[in-house]
Length: 240
Length: 341
Image (cartoon, rainbow over all chains, first blue to last red; front, side, top):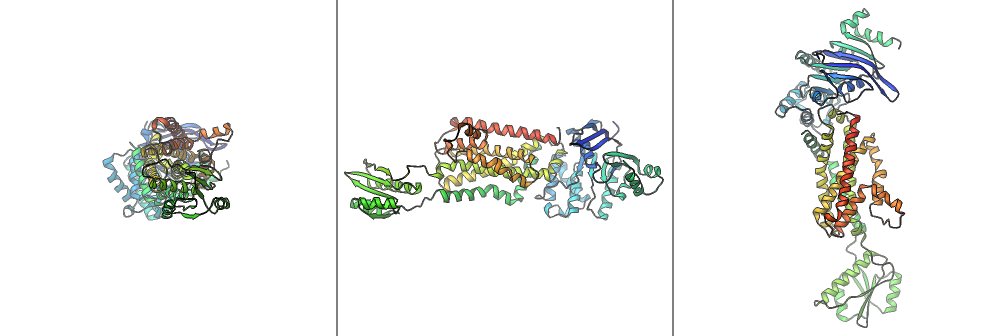
């Protein structure tokens, strides 16, 4: 029950296509866990299984000791999808208000939390603007703010920093680290090496299977290199 | 109650999306006006021939909005046959004969109405002075607009709620907000309830506008009570909304949602009573029985034309409610695809 997330022997098929094959991952609380892999390797599917919004063909996702899906646990999970799930007709503030109220956040806290989260992603000045007028990066940041709004224990982020400039990316990663210090767990998918480098632990996915997992140092040491890119290429080349 | 958050959000979206709001509230008004223009030309000025008319009648009829000529019987019949006049009025042996050309229901109605008013004005004592009405062609018909009006009211409510509701739910799916909502503690039924609530408010508004406009501005025939009509259209709107959101599950984009119109909406129009189905094979007529609009239209006709109250159409209301319950349950079930809880 110590683990934040336990994925046990997850397999999933869409029709005949095997998307995940016997994936088992255990994530300790208070760390940043990176899911690294090329597109089509099953990262997003794995995340949906973790959240309980997709029932895997085989296996079970357990979050803080509770099998998913669980409405109670959903309150403690923040999710940011790969596509920006926002209402373009509404303003940033209105989007945040909606997601805050369905997240189970207590009413008196909603206002302050929205303010804090918009500040974190540097969107305070755009709060009253309609999302349809936002740039790609702004939408990405707002999605992140929406995932953070109810102060979740576990943050699940699918490619969170795509389209965000390096300066803000730095700020956001600092925020991630601050959150882990507070004991929160962050699960993030990425295919950017320098972001993977910042994760405490990594799992490398290819064609629906975990090829290797461990801390960044473990992975580098295993093939005696000091570049994560090498690691990625080494395992990526391996014949299936 | 998180459904309230969904309702609140939908109301806000509507306020921002003025075009969808206009489509739902004003487009029906525009279309029903066009139909009224086509089907109900109230200000028609008939051409009438007078045969052996008393002098005071001739003087009185010239005051009215009608073209009047004096002819003898032979000339009048020839003119009627040629379609030059709409009717001939003839006095013979103290009996009044009205001969209508009859192929145009609008003209026939204008003539009979005019004559009734005149006879009433000239006979304040209400003496028996009923004209014998003869038709050259056709026979008496109900005005098309009055006849189909109730069905049209039901249809517009159904169609626009189906379209706007279905597409907004579809968008939630496409833009990922549905998934995002389901990755929260929001229950599936709360999403559906929120939708029904949010759109329900606009459906009420829409119904009130369509009904008031049809009845008070376009002067659609209305024998029953306004509130009965509103109740029926609301149930129709609920069925349309639940069907629209359910079918949006099977559409991949907005265009595919539009493709449901010929499949789901158009057949309902054909079977809802705008066209007379009495000559159709009973088995084929049965198709109408599985369509919500059929029941809504039946109830609306009952209220608007025959002045019925709830005891006369409770069965139709129950069936409509049943359709909604069925569609809503199927929809909550369909959301299981996203999350089992």
